[in-house]
Length: 195
Ligand SMILES: C[S@@+](CC[C@H](N)C(=O)[O-])C[C@H]1O[C@@H](n2cnc3c(N)ncnc32)[C@H](O)[C@@H]1O
Image 1 (spheres, rainbow, N blue to C red):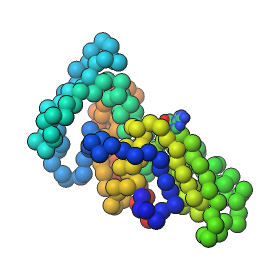
Image 2 (cartoon, helix red, strand yellow; image 1 turned 90 degrees about the horizontal axis):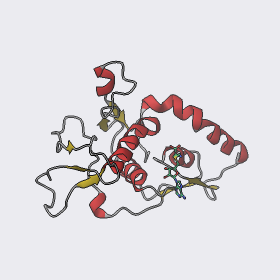
Image 3 (tube, rainbow, N blue to C red; image 1 turned 30 degrees about the vertical axis):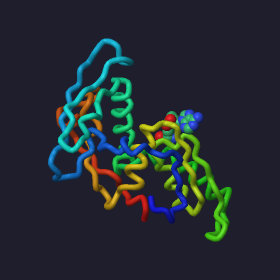
Image 4 (cartoon, rainbow, N blue to C red; image 1 turned 45 degrees about the vertical axis):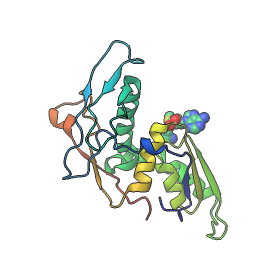
C-alpha cells in the first residue's frame, strides 16, 4: 500500500521477519529452499528445520515450532478467500453486507473530510482495503504477526495482479478428491491493492 493510501495496517515488522513465506514463489522463478518437516509428538515444542539457503546469514537458525508452521499453513489457505479470484463468492457473502451497511450509514462521503472506519481483527486486510476503496479512512487492527506479515506482503509488495502463485492446499490431502486438487495453484492477488 502506498503512503498516500488512506489504508493503514497497524504493526511494525522486524526486518528479519521479511523472509519469503514457504510456498509463495514468483511464477517462473527458481524454486526456493526445500524444507524438511519432522513431525514430533508435541506440537508446542516440535520444530521445522531447514538448511539455510546461501543468502541467509548462517547465524540465523530456522527452528520453527510446529504450532507456528500450522498457523502459516492456515494463513496460506486464508489468502485464497481474501486475495484470490477464487475467494470472490465468499468475500461477497461476508464483506458485502458490511460494505453496503457502511454505504447506507455514510451516503455523503467527501474526499476532503472522509469518514473513518476501524476494522478490528483485520486478518489479511481485504475488508480494510475494500472500505478504503469506498472512500473511508480505513484502519485495520491486527495483533497476529502471521496475519500482518502476510497482509503487509500483499499490500506493500504487490506490483501486478496475479503476481504470486501459491499452492494453498498442498500441505493436506483432507477434502481433496484428486492429486490435482491438492496440487492446485492459485494466483494472488486478484487486484492491485494500491490502485
Ligand atoms: C476470526 S479472525 C477474522 C479475521 C478477518 N476479520 C477475516 O474475516 O478473515 C479474528 C482476527 O482477529 C485478530 N484479533 C483477535 N483479537 C485481537 C485483538 N485484541 N487485537 C487485534 N487483533 C485481534 C486475530 O488475530 C484474528 O486475525
